[in-house]
Amino acid sequence: MNTHALALGYRYISIPHPSSQIAMKDLIFDYSDLITNLCSKSNFSIRKPTGIASYYYQGTILNELDESKFSDGDVVQETSEQEDSDDLFKAYGCSFFSYSGYTLLYKFFDSLEFQSLEKKFSYMFRFDIEKCFDSIYTHSIGWAIKGKDFSKENIGKKTFDSDFDAKIRSMNDDETNGIVIGPEFSRVFAEIILQAIDCKVENELLKENKFRGTDYTIKRYVDDYFVFTRDENLARYIYDKFRTELRNYKLFVNESKESVVSRPFITNLSIAKTEVSDALDHFFSSIKRDKSSIDSRIAKKEIPSLIYIYKPYTRSKILINRFKSSVRSNNADYSSFSGLVMTIIRSRLSKIQSEMAHIKNIRDHDSVYRNFITVIIDFTSFLYCMSPKVRSSFLFSQILILVKKVSEALSPLSKSEIHKKIKDETSIILNNLTSPDVPKIEIINFLLCLKLEFGNYVLSEQQIVDFFGVSNNDVSGLDYFEMISALYMLCMDGQNLLLRDAIYDKLECLITESKSPETKTELILMFFDLASFPHANNAKIESSFKLLYSKVKGIQPKPAAVSECLNYLKANPFFTDWSGKLSIERILLRKEAQAGYHF
Image (cartoon, rainbow, N blue to C red; front, side, top):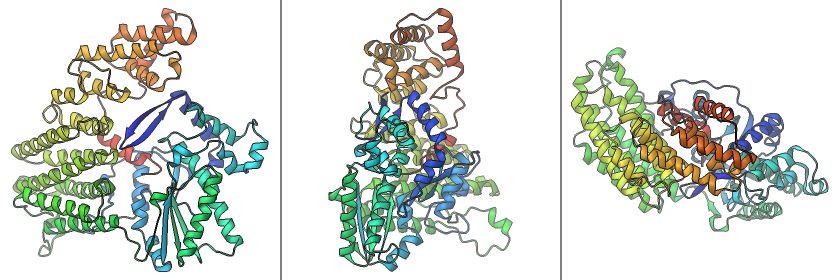
């Protein structure tokens, strides 16, 4: 079975065939205890599965989360990395395994653990594996679990590692070189192999009387390694040990990215992040209302924590210029920390939105909130334009949802001005980012949020048509995600029937051209979704089903079987929720909680 891949910020993320997902689900479930045991061997890993997730429930958590650097009694309180991760998972957990360690690598650098390592060791050697997931040799899972010699001597025997190997290969055209990027089980597969390498290196060092915690400490986040030592020569020696052992597994270090630094352990990127955090800290401090003269706790809650921002566009421009200056002077790039900045802003905005429920005579403070929101929209729109990555699109969408909630409490005039600002920024974003160089999938998240939250006023139908390039109902250049998204945004009310029919024609064309359509992931995903679309072209989906059935089975299906299958698919949507009850806020939070690792 093949997979469907999509480019996300120069990284290809794969979706396995549904049948492969089902098979892998059974294996992960049956061997979950063994998997967590195999992922508990390394003393170096700082992100690994430690058990089966024991809960799944939904709740409101945005107001409880904060990943900012700031501490402000009126607006926000800082929480620990683990608290952030745990709260988010408990509310919207979508991972089969529970994980220990750091959800994001920057949290390790900001941790007390990292500070402690800097106090203890003089040098930090950093390196990573070149194209790790694309290079993993699938048979090496057996080497990691049982040793290379034993695995080679027992080829063909039915074991956990051979089954895991076979199922991983089935998702990649049975290739032994490389594993699909994206699914949780791929990260688990890689972690088992890399933990075995960790253990081998530690044992080799122990034989030479080099002790972990005394002579050195190693931290690994997926395929990023950090070697801490008091002696630079020892750091390079350990690096050579890893390079040798990785080579034994057909993996290689990325020599262009290796670096050794002496204390202080700070990079240009870290400096840039600090400068941007300071700029945000200064901005929020400058607009914080002084409530020290108010004795009553209730009275404090009844007035805004913000003061009026005079000339909001000037304030936004100052913030943007400081951001650009930090990026340029430190030779950094926006994508490295735009997500962090947006997370800080989201947390701040969430607290502001929560406080508004307690404000007495909210309309008396209309301009305070309106101008604050204007600055937020202006600044975050700039950030998104500079770094239209997946995580940025999720965070920007969450910010816009909060902006809408704030605007609902304001006067009709202020609400209209805020929505007009979002509309103007949307036009700028679409003009800047609608190009072959920017994958559409990363912008679709943002457009779906606008469509669902603000309707046609902020995002017109013509803008959507132009974005997808379907003014002539030509869908030949669209992939599965783009076609389904276009269908969702343009045809959900039963309109644009010619576009709908063109998409159904594309499905039939894909089936016709394929020798083995049942193995094509994109085709199968598309068939399931189009079959459950509430305004489906019934004649065309029936024709496609008959064609698919005859190609797979070699015979024509009976009319009763056609009706039974299509009725079932209509009643049980597969990948896309066509109900019209989609909660974009809940989905975005689930997306954020979903990954065991964030890259």
